[in-house]
Image (cartoon, rainbow, N blue to C red; front, side, top):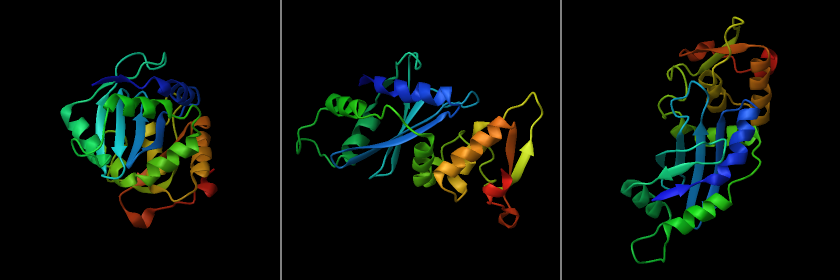
Length: 209
């Protein structure tokens, strides 16, 4: 089925303007939990992908998005696999409950938040870290998950979102503190060093600012 999640426009443009190219929020419909996620920094291969995590069944759908997103076009096409997994998430078997997928999508679209604080997205990503951490390409060096500290970047470089995103997944700090810290890093042209050695971990981000 073809559908345009047009109500993503406001929070998408808000995220671009605020230099926070990660969006995550959850919607509930019947027995189904739908966690919408987008990762769209310049270096992200997934910039035109809408991820929908089906929260009850823990199935991750990857839906290619078409159209000019800043203008408000987020057209997706579901396949039979996606449709069957959505039915399972809703706990619907064929014929037992009246079901119209377009009505479901229209309801989800109407309930997309029109203002999404970045800290809320960080919290939602962390709540689903077990799934998000396995998505290919959204973080650098998947095996390096222990924060060592900050590093100054050359003037010609900027911090990569794929590196900063590890904070959302692996550092145990309130989402609003993580947001302040990432903004501090961007403003001061700094990035983070990570290790695969837990003995080198330094998660005291307050001391790093």
